[in-house]
Image (cartoon, rainbow, N blue to C red; front, side, top):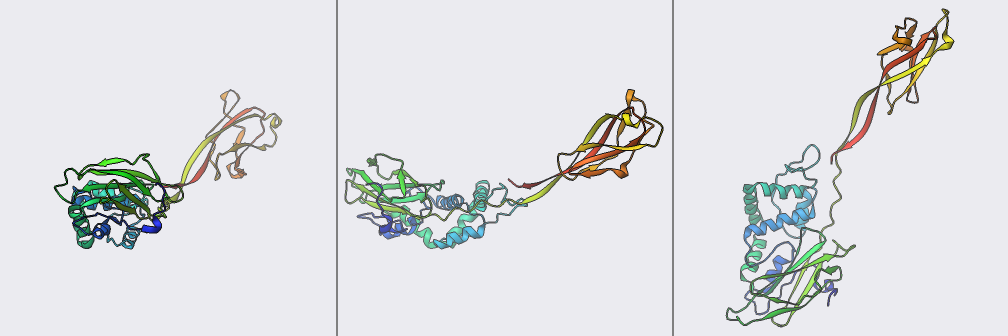
Length: 350
């Protein structure tokens, strides 16, 4: 019966029902309620710590303080992890955008730090570690747990058949149905599957759009044997943080371009008083400054002894430079003048 609203019944706790168990069911619930830890019977304490590191990474906490506060809300103490903030606003050696991703990469690259963190986690959370060890090593019956995968939109339901008596070699338990809360969609069409002894069987579920983080994910596993049934749940996730705001600064590029203009100044024929004229040169960006004339020549390449450069009378209007000269000649004039300008843009770290 897929899509049953079990959350109202089970709340945000993972409840493991192991009928005929050697371990009180609530002891397994004390660890599986977090939706973080894998309780397969083959798991080690190093796996326990790695599950916690993976949970930090999945939630993408922006800072260490944010990660610690979120963990404390569910009763887990996160020891100090020295991940520095870089000048560009990223974290650690990996230059990750979030603190938790940087922490995961840090432990992956530094095995000695992983071992030290494992010791610190154990000391800081003795009751949680003890509950995990008890569930992994002593629980009997059908043990179920639901965990958040590295994908925040997915939840993995797992179960192990651990026979209560070692003489139950003829025991045959088959999953008949899995009921799950309405905020989930199953990746499996047919849940029917025979459970092997002490081997893990898993089913993958997706959180439906619109309810990805706000609701817990609850499950009821029914089998052909009434003594081997179980329930499980993964708690709601904290909302994913907004992407970090990358540090930004203003970048200024100082550029130049040659302005080349030519003209036949026919009206300036004669030896009379010289007349002022100008060429216009535009720039692709504001902030234009006119440079001194680099070269100018007259018809045939002859020197322009009759052409005077008037730098003091240059003007810039609406980002167009008016490069001024004076002359009383009507000869062909070609002028090359450098203009300088700045391009300003806001640059943010990736």
